[in-house]
Picture (tube, rainbow, N blue to C red):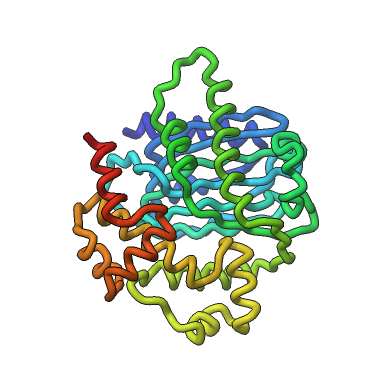
Amino acid sequence: MNEESNYVDGKIFSFTNELGVTLDKELEHFRVNFFKGFAFLPDMAIHFGSFNAINDFTRITDQSVITDGIGFVFHNIFEGYSDGPKGTIEPPYVRIFPYAIRQTLHFKRNTNVTHVSVCISAASLKNFLQEEAEQFQFLFDSANNFLIEELMTDGILRTVNDIVKTDVPDTMRSFYYRMKAMELLYHLFQSLKKRGNFVGQKLTMKEIESVYRVRDKIVSSLTSLCSIAELKQIAGMNETKLRKIFTQVFGMGIYDYYQHLRTKEAARLLRDENLTVSEAGYRMGFENLGHFTKVFEKHIGKKPKKYVQSFNHRSE
């Protein structure tokens, strides 16, 4: 196991050194289950893997040799591949941020983490988007301190599973992962387009951290939404500012975000735990089955019973 750990750590250091990123002693805080990384310099890189946090730890992201790099992190959206003790699994997310603005990442002890991360230069991303780039101009403003979190889509999930689980032969392996990275960005930008002509205000790290405390509070209790008064206190800002920044970061208002997460969890209960529709609805705090059905259809795209039928059909 020691030799295997040294081998995996060696692959990580080789990859990060190629990108000009320094890890120092940060790997001491993690037990890495697996890691793969591919650098397509000077404009792009992709890496993915799974690890367990051994200690509570905070990491500050570093810049790389990719000029004006924009980061896309797909966090906790595939099984962890852990051969050690099963730890806590944090909620999944897709996060977009400029590498020029350092991000503070917090890891909790005994937490399983999986990720697929893509970094691409602003120029290459513009070339990829072609005429669509004008809709995402805020991404290319080097003076802008932005952070965006997007919800999962079926296309993102399918592509992530292709990237992580496909046994790719050595022949043209790098080409495969480069194409899959672009496919992942394609599905993500299809989702981002739904935000319309997004114009984001410049955010301070304090504002970003505040809105994430609000998000964490919502995630911690999906059966009932906290009052706006409590969320304002957590954020340390007035209601208008909180709602504006929350919508900018997460792409929807506080209540819609809460409803989306609780219906996603209800869908998981139907799919993975075989609960009945009424059981799943009541578990997630819906007192009226008709209301649950209406909200579920809005956020999942199908009524709960149709969703169960379609899932069972795919499983046959």
